Image (cartoon, rainbow, N blue to C red; front, side, top):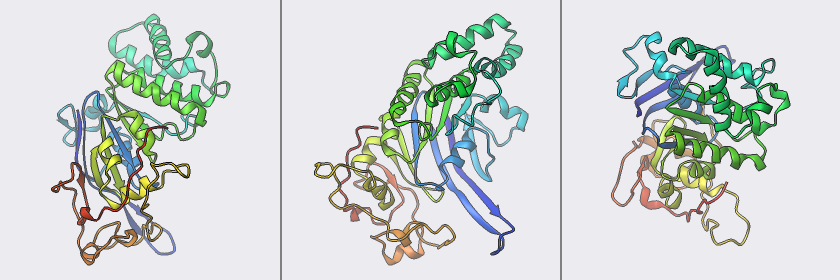
Length: 336
């Protein structure tokens, strides 16, 4: 199990005309991902979901809070002591074209992590060859025809499968998939999503899916948790199907309202929630982060920031003072 408690991250921008500025990427985020489970972080670009994924994978440091892996807090450990823990969490990057070294064959790409593991476990070259073939077969590729190829000789979907195979070489406990299908042809996306879902079921690997697409989040883990993130704050958290069927926070409602639906279908939202303004990250008010854009805001929203909590009548946690003001009929999301 991987948990986070009060994770914060602030970036400082310097040297621009307006002077230095702080950007709060994460604001006290809590999360818990069970072994073999699924969780999805969704939100618009710049909301902090990728930063949180990189922190969980050990690729980024955080300013405050604590991450625990398998019950062991990472904070007290030195960087070298953390490596074995974070090695169990592997990142699948958004762009399969830049994630692979163009000068290395698939064989060389897979053998880089396998050599390190072989030295640690006393394995030989034969084991490395067998393991490379095994992970390629796991992701649906033919080792005999793929191992000798370079990335430019593979399709986008095949490249992403090689990226996943590379992650599997170290037997991870979790895969962090950051927009893993956004740069792949639409016709190939379902195959990658089905692969991630199959790996979770067959190998017991946890999957953390970072996306702006509610449909893909539901496909990966309809039994998992959904974290809706806005400007670094989790504004709604609960079971995927529960949030999709009955969203509470106006920001979640606006995300669901943005899903395109063919005109005339019954599942179209009768009252779509449209933000009043475009996002202005430079404006930092003391109240609700979404208040300036929220069509339901009240005076309290401008001066007081709501915290994530459960209230009567809502099965999911939310950060909204007026959950009873829901006025959107959410569309059921069934496909990709």
